[in-house]
Amino acid sequence: MTITALTADVLVVGFGKGGKTAAHVLADAGKRVVLIERSENMYGGTCPNIGCVPTKMLVHYSGAKRLADDAQEYFTRSTAGVRALTAAFRAGNFEALDGKDTATVLTGTASFVDPHTVAVGEGDDRITVTAPTILVNTGSEPVLPAIPGLAASPHLVTSTELTKTSNLPERLVVLGGGYQGLEFAAIYRHFGTHVTVLEAADRLLPREDEDIAEAVAEILRGDGVTIVTGAKVTEVRDNGATSTVVYEKDGEPQSVEASAVLPATGRRAVTAGLRLDAAGVRTTPGGAIEVDEYLRTSQPHIYALGDVNGGEQFTYISLDDARIVLDQLLGRGKRTTTDRRAVPHTLFVTPPLATVGLTETQARAQGRNIKVAREKVADIIAMPRAYTVEETRGVMKFIVDADTDLILGAALLSIDAQEVINTVALAMRHNITATELRDAIYTHPSTTEAFNEVFDKVVSA
Image (cartoon, rainbow, N blue to C red; front, top):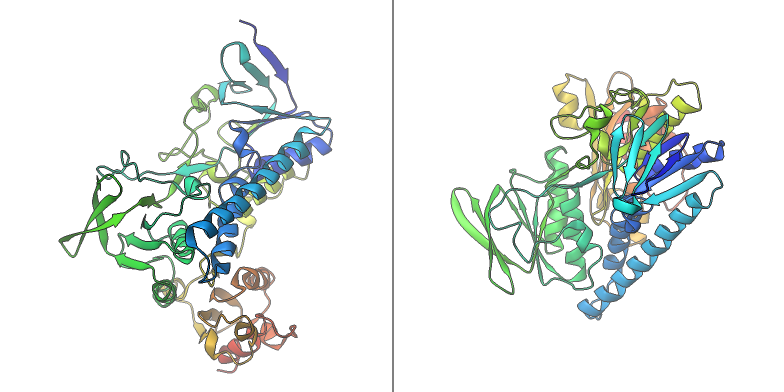
């Protein structure tokens, strides 16, 4: 057997946001870079293939559906559009990196041979790559809960399958009321599917303030999503054309029929099969790679970026991971994960929920002296943007330090929230006060105009 042996300055395992960003910059800096991706369907990583891009495109398509549209026909056309875009992104990601003179993309399953060597493929196709610096960016994968009958159910679907299927399920049961579960619930309800969300906790979104979580639930219910909280799923039974999802609520057995069952109960780091033990790389009890604030593993020349290191599972966190590692490899080596402040998040229901910083509950638990500004979007006179696009549902809530006038946190359930939250986060990072945001000049009509009115509630108090 002949084994091809390559050497590189930097080896990147995984084509996610952090890995590909670092690979581009390092290759442009003249470093010899080899990037390994196990699947040709994942060039570019989760976001452009099965995550952010296809799901948000489905949000757009589902929101544009008209009553006169045939549900199945419209869904088929929508998913065809998604596949066309993701295919274009995938090809673009591959060509942009592999086309560089100093970069090579290899496709195959990677595993460590020793701390500086990774093998790709098997048999006559086996290649080894040796490098003094290695970046691991293999991402995360869905966790399948241990529910009797679920794994064997022919109606079990993953989030990946839901972004690729052309068949609109008649009845979708979502297990879990977190970000992923609620996004798919909203998407498929707008396409015309009957959707039921089963959440084990006593309410949705337990990390958010109760009033915000209830506002989200109210909107989803208003759109026709059935939400059952305090639901402990005990079994999934196959009935041929459908499955019966059995659950307990208040000690009583209940059930719901499903033509598709989506577990949305979390994700775990993809480290199985990497043979990290051969490299001397330590992992957490949950399987994520242990890193320090510089994203160095137990082997200082090996870095872990993105979901695989057990941090927040967002594409933009993976991007920032790349910045930290690049600062180590090409810069001053000062940037760390501790530099992150006021990192925003968005749940893409309709309208979206965007949050940053502390909730009211967290601020009070810390003993902060706070003021709370809360207003329903429909009642914000200074924000005609909501009326011009006919989306007045939702609420805006800000937590402000009563002593310093600094913004401690925000929850925006409103049109354009995914954009406006970035302005709030930037203000928080640069210590811009609530008064300054209230008194700033904004375009009209825009959603940021709401600051003029909502912040007045706390500044003038």
